[in-house]
Each structure stands twice: as structure tokens, then as C-alpha cells.
Image (cartoon, rainbow, N blue to C red):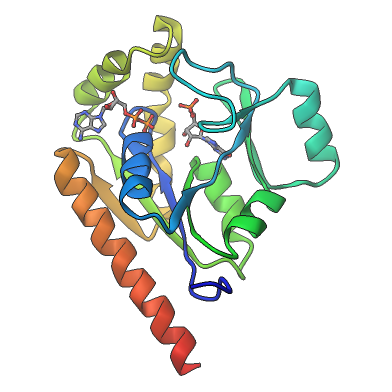
Length: 198
Ligand code: ADP
Ligand code: 5GP
């Protein structure tokens, strides 16, 4: 690592509530080389969220300006709010770090068009819809209306699983985390080998 040549980018997507934020944070805690790509959003912060850590919380006007200036690698409107990944953030981070993205299927499609990015795309599923509902309620960070909106988006979201390199069920958290860890480590290894042999 150092010049960014072997650094990888991991995308974690899932229906809302399946567990990607939890797993993303676990990866970053264990692997200091991994940094989370902190997105910009027009959504209001949840009670436990910190500006600049969980998201950069901005207004609609600020977001639109960034779109007009072509500053995003990708952005999408999700649950009536905008979410996006700034080019400068990613380009700076990847020089010295591996990056993990918690973005949806629309953003994944857009990022995939940048064929120079070494992306590993992972889609997480909940074990079943009842458990998904339990997790959305248990998180206790959204209003009941938001929980319903998120729960209802499952059917559309899940249609996009085949855009991903890996599809995993997040039933037992530790097992799922270990599977993701193995995927990341093997891709990291092959990224190093590819660089050495080319
Ligand atoms: P997402 O980021 O995909 O919307 P979160 O990571 O916020 O989902 O997880 C939603 C809720 O489910 C949180 O309360 C989290 O602690 C819980 N959770 C995540 N993974 C599991 C799991 N494997 N088993 C039980 N609860 C989980
Ligand atoms: P939440 O409001 O629960 O934090 O996120 C809602 C959805 O937005 C999740 O599916 C999350 O992955 C997605 N998301 C968060 N940041 C981005 C981003 O920068 N781009 C895209 N396309 N989706 C994002």
C-alpha cells in the first residue's frame, strides 16, 4: 500500500435495515486500512448520527449545486432524499486506503461505469422479511412512516441482486461478517498478485 495501486473498493448494498451500516463499521474498526466513504445527503440526521462522520448533511440547494458542478461519482434520490459520493473524497482516500461504500443499487450501477475503479460488489439480504421489519423497528432511529417506506422498498431493491459479485444472507452477524472478511482478504491478495505479475 502507499501509492494506492493495490487498494480496493468494496461496495456493500442491501435493502434498508439488513445490516450494512453495522458491518461496514465493524470492518473499519478491525482494518485500519479501510476507510468508509462518507456520503453527502439531504436527509436529516438521525438522533445518533454525527455530521462529517455518518454523512455530510447538506441542504437541497447545496446538493443541486454539487450536481451541476459535476462533483459526484454517483448520486441517487432514495426515500425522497438525495445521497451522493464526491469524486474528490474518493480520489483522495484511495491513494492511501481501501474504501468501503455503503450505497444503494443505483449508485453501484453508476460507479460500475468507471472501469478504472477496482470494485468488489457485495449485496446483503436479511434472512426473511419479518426479520427485516424487526431490525428496522429495533434500530429505533426512524419514524414509523420511514420504517414503513423502507420496509416497502424491499421488493424493488432486491431485484438488483444480480448486479453484484457476491450475495450473502446476514442472518448471524458474526458469520456474515466473517464471510465478508474472507471475500475482502482474498480480493486484496489477488489485487496485490495482479500488480506484481503485470
Ligand atoms: P442498514 O445499514 O442496512 O440499513 P443497520 O446496519 O442499520 O442496517 O441494521 C439495522 C438494525 O439491525 C440495527 O439495529 C442492527 O444492530 C441490526 N442488525 C444488523 N445485523 C444484524 C444481525 N445479523 N442480526 C440481528 N440484528 C442485526
Ligand atoms: P439511510 O438513510 O438508511 O442512511 O440510507 C438509505 C439508503 O441510501 C441506503 O441504501 C444507503 O446505502 C444509501 N446511500 C447512502 N449513501 C449513499 C450514496 O452516497 N449514494 C447512493 N447511491 N446511495 C447511498
